[in-house]
Length: 458
Image 1 (cartoon, rainbow, N blue to C red):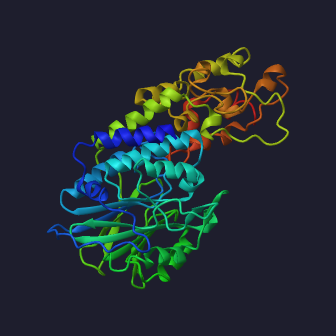
Image 2: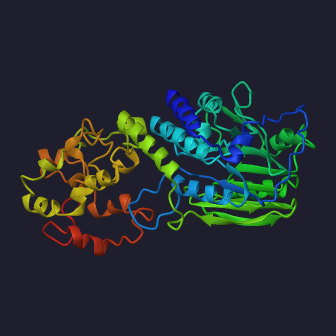
Image 3: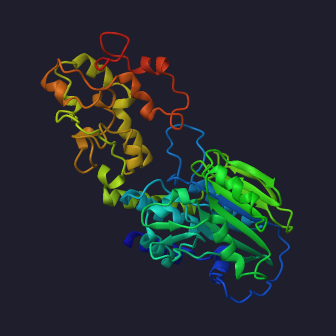
């Protein structure tokens, strides 16, 4: 928890000129049943725009393994700042900031919230990943400045974990923002109420205090559609995780949309006229420049990872081992293969795989475990890469990334290597990181062994 406290505190102090929305947020208290009505604020000549992100899924920045990747806080920050130049902006996030609850995810969660703070985020809904971090972690983040919102996430004692409703007074318009999580995503130790009933309860004591209602709903698509259809009280219900972004469309009087898929798309709504909200989804592609302040936030994140040098156990990224895994299912290291496979090793040493670690170093991402998985030998496997401090001999892609842990094969060559090598390619050369991957063409670049197929394990 200490890291979350430090990063929120440092970031907030360094914002010398808070964005208009962030300054407004300091004056807004949680609106709960019985709260006093807010006074009308001075109107603005600017249009009012609501920007919603969601399902960042740990992507502070695209991994960079291929060109034309979308998403990342660096581009999002630039886009939000650009819109603030011509519009009054309310920026909110649906949730799903990270993908787990490990120490690595907690570091990343703190950095993502800090990046959103730099954008002047008004509300961040508690999604599945946030709820898995636990109620204590969420309350700690809120105490240190994170504007968490949720009308239906409670601890085991029945207490709400975050504010049920927040009201933004921006440009003379009052936008109430609430958030909900699907009950099917409730982790152990967390209670999740019925979303619709929770929303109605949250707004029940706030009548007259706002002009429009925005609902951030971390629900699967079927539940999202049902909620929008059953909630005419809302001007918009914006969700995730729906797999693909959903452009704004009407479900009765309510606008429905979804911002999802690693934060690659934002939902952008023109809400200048009450009751006439409209908008679109906007892709954060390479046409959107990186923002300098977000680059500094990324640097702090990478510095923190470098200081911690997390192991696979601490990241939650170690591949699971099935029950009964034999004791000789261990990484032996590529040097153990050279005695019998010197010619193959000579070919391998001249391939890009053998220099995979340097690719990370050149981009300053050699400290990020997400990247280490595909740029080291046997990440998280028995005898495989553990950390930069303890596994210097296992950096870059080695023989056993394709052929499998081969200690047993080294002891007895008749004991075949465990992996069918050609099947391992797509573990890293997936659609996200290597969209143009084609085995026949790529195999030619690393071809070795006595046949046109990879040696061993076939």
